[in-house]
Amino acid sequence: MTEHSCDVAVIGAGTAGLAAERAAREGGATTRLIDESFGGTVCATVGCMPSKLLIAAADAVHGVRRAPVFGVEPGGVTVDGPAVMARLRKERDRFAAATRGAFDDLPAGTCLKGRARFTGPTRLELDTGDVVFARAVVVAAGAYPMVPAPFEALGDLVLTNRTVFEIADLPRSLAVIGGGAIGLELAQAMARLGVETCLFDHAETLGGSEDAEVQAALAEILGAEVTLHLGVEVEAAREGDEARLSWSGASAGEACFERVLVAAGRPPQLDGLDLAAAGLALDDTGVPAFDPTTLQCGDAPVFVAGDVNGDRPVLHEASDEGTRAGRNAAAWPDVTPVARNVPFRLTFTDPPFAVLGAPAAADSIVGTASYADQGRARVEARAQGLVRLYAAAPDGRLTGAELFAPGADHMAHLLVLALSRGETASALLDLPIYHPTLEEGLKPALRAICAALPTSARSSRDSGDPPGA
Image 1 (cartoon, one colour):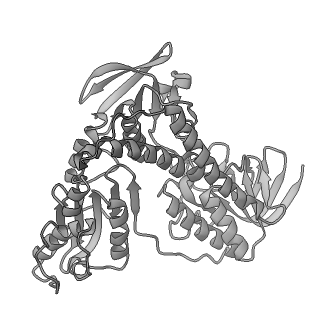
Image 2 (spheres, rainbow, N blue to C red):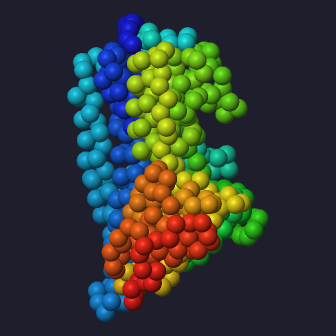
Image 3 (cartoon, rainbow, N blue to C red):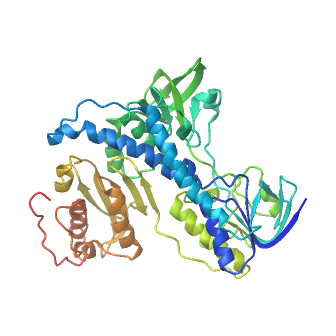
C-alpha cells in the first residue's frame, strides 16, 4: 500500500476529469488523476468520433443513391460492411491515441490506475490498496450505458455504444431501443448502410424535442428511413442467434433481429464510489446535490463535473464543468460561481436536429420557417425540415429554438451566440445574410416574431426575399 497526498484528487480521466486536473494544476494545486484504465475519453473511444465515422460512411452511401436527382448515374452501390467497420476502428483508434497522449504529458506521479471509493470526506481508497489524502476531490467518473432488464437475457446479441463499434460486420437487421441522440444517429446510419432497422421507444417523442411541430417533422422524415415504433413497451427473448422482440402500446407486433442496440440512456457512473462516506446529501438516484454554477456539493470540498452529475451530458459542458470544478477545488474554500452556457444539444441526423435555450413558454412568440421549399436546400436536394424560434415580448429577444433542417448544426451556433448576447429577432435580421445560403431560411421565422410584436424594432433591411431564397 502506498499513501498519496495532494491538494486535489480527480476521479475519472475523461473529458471532465482531464479538464479538472489541468485547471487545478494551473491554479497551483498538486494533483492526482485516478482512473481504472486511462483508455481515453468516451468521445474519442465509444462516443462522438466513432459514431460520426459510421455516419460519414452512411452519408457517402446516401449521396451515391440520390445522385440520379442531379442527372448523375453512378451505377450499383455495394456496401462492404467489414471495410466500413475497419475504417471506423482505424480512425477511431487515431483519435483515442491522441487523447491518451495527454496522459504522457502530465507531471510524473500524477496518474494513479485503479478504482477509487470514498472512505471519508476527502480520503480515497483504491482497489490496488493505495490511499489518497486530498484537500478537495473532483468526481468526474462519467456515465455508463444502461441495459434494461428485458434485454439482459439476450447476452451477446445486445450492443451498446461501448460495443457497437467493435462488431466485425454490419448486421442484417437491427432493433434500436431508445429514440435519444445515440439511438437516432445510429439507427439512421445503419439504415442507410443497408441494415433493416427498427427503432422502439416507450415515449411518443424523439430526440428530446418539446415542440409538437418539430416532433412531427422528426417522425415523418426519419420514419421514411427507419421503421419507428413509439409509445410502446418491448419484451425480448433469445431464439438461437436472434432476438425476438414483441411490443405493445401505440402499435403491436413481433419480429426477430440479428442484433439489438440498446440506447436507453446513460446514467451516472456511481457504483462503488461510496459517496455517502463523504458525508454528501444524495438525491434518489444517488447523485449528490450540487450547485451548477460552482459544481460544489453543498459545503463539502467535493465537486462533481461532467456526465456523472447527470445534468448536461454533452462534451462542451463536460469540458467547461471540469475546468470550473478544478479551479474551485484548487481554491477551496474560496469557490467562484460562473454563469452557465446557454443549453445546447445537437443530434447528427440528416437533417441535423438542434435544441437550444429554453423551450417555448405559454407567452412565447414563436416564428416558424419551413425548409420544404428553401432555395439553397432545393439546390442541394435537401429541402425538408423546419425551424422554430422562440422569443419574448415586448422586444422580440430570442429565448430558445428547435431546428430540424439542413445546416442546423451550423446555424444553431449563430443562434446560441444570439441567445447568449440577448439579441432580438430584428437585430438578427439587420445582419447581412448571404444569398443563396441555408441561413436565409431563418428569415421567415425572424420576421414572424417581429410582426407579432408591435413594439419590436423594425429591421432596416429589405423585407422581401431574393428569388429562389
